[in-house]
Structure formats: structure tokens, C-alpha cells
Length: 309
Image (cartoon, rainbow, N blue to C red; front, side, top):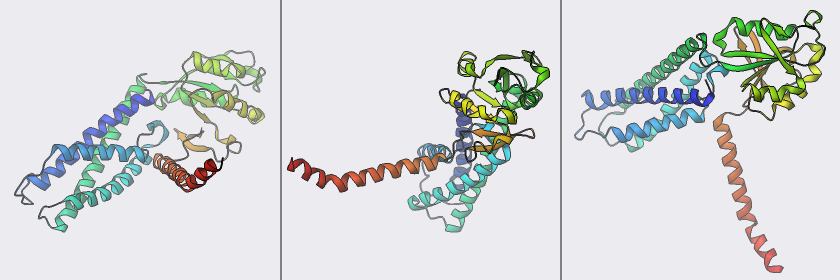
């Protein structure tokens, strides 16, 4: 499943769970009779506002990253933190606009209950999504075309793990040799490993990626092949692919990788998104603000210089 389609599915699930949580909140606040109202508050407009608010909030805090990039526990913990912070912000927004006669204690309980319901529903939706996607992957639906760069014991170990666990979402199309002469002597004359063919050598890497519509590149290199890593990264710069390497190469890309685990086999994400979405937004806003300050502060000088000319 492509990242765009995956995000669309996640977005639709979130819309459903967010609206369901708000309907529960609205019922207990308005329809249950717990808090008396002379005029019943509107439902649809606040519902749309709250839904849009949460979708933007989730996007800002990175809850629409690919589920392949984070474990189930990490995703759940992120949802707990993001919904808690978002509920606090929403509490103050609603409180400032609230004109009902409800007591503050009741209002706090309602917000607390809303946060718990929202958190449980969103987490449940994400877990159901993961379950369905894994079932589809096991059935061979939505697998990502993958190549393994390397032709050594490391690469074969990586291939064994991917073939053993199809729920990882990788469909191994083939290998790309790093060197014409492999470091594994008994595989030198072979052009396939467990029916997975060799598609070419390192000089053909970019063409292989484009030809086979590759979305993931897994790198398994022996220590003697480490010098080739820079060339591999350079060749992948021009194409939109995810890249993961075996952990013993961490010292080469120190500070540029994030460790993940594939059923006990640790891999490192190369060129990860080091900044969270909200950090990128804050950085962009700060850049724009500083640019405006420089322009405004320097305007009199530029006008004076132009007049002197």
C-alpha cells in the first residue's frame, strides 16, 4: 500500500473515531440532562470544527507517519500524549466560549471523559487498521517492492528474515551486487538465492529501482564492502525510496539513522525525518518572521541608498 493511500485510510478512520467521541461528549453534556440548558447548543458546526482541529493536530505531531516506521507501542504512546495535550488546548478554547451554567467541576469531568473516550477510540481504530493491513500483507496484498543491495552472508540473512515474515510488508524483487566478485566464494557463480534473482550490479542500481518500481532498499553489506555505502546512498538520492541498513554500519552514518526492529532483526533507517512536523512548521514560521524583520529593519537603509544613486 502506498504511503498516500495508507494516509487516506488512516484519515478516514480518524474522522470516524473523532466524530464518534464528540457525539458521545455532546450526548452526556447536552442530551443526558446532567447539565440543564435553556437553549440546546448546535451540534454540526462544532463537530466539524473539532474534527478539523484534531486532524490538523495529529498531522502537526506526526501521527500520519507510515505505520511501518513505528511499533504498535510507540504509536499508542504517541496517541496518548498528543490527545492529552490537544484536549487541554481544547478545554481552554471551549471554556472561553462557553456561556452555559454548568459548574467547573462538571466541565472538568466532561473534558476528562472526552479525552479518555477519544484516546480509546483513536487507539482502537489504529489497532484495527494495523490488524487488517497485516492480514492483507500475509495474503500478499499491498506488499512494497523491495531490493536487497549486497551479495554476502549479511544480505542473505536479511533476505531470509524478509521471506520468513511477509507481514513486514516487503516483496523482495531481487538482489543488486555490490562488487563483481562476491565476498562469499560459494555464491560467486550463482545468480539467485532462494529463487530471488540478481538484477544487476551497483552501477545499475538507479535503473533497477526505476524499472521495477522499487519503494524500499535494504542494504546488507559485509565489513569489507563498507566503502561502497557512500556510492549506494548517492545513487539512491535521485529516487524516492526508503532505505534501511544493517546495524554494524551505524558508525558510517552516525547521527543520520533511526533504529527499528524487524521481528528481532535490527535495521536502521537512513535519511530519516529528523524533525517532527510541528518542528518543521515552527522552523519555517521562524524563518519567515526573521526575514520580515530584516526586510522591515533594512527598508529605510535601502530607500536611502536608492535615493543617493
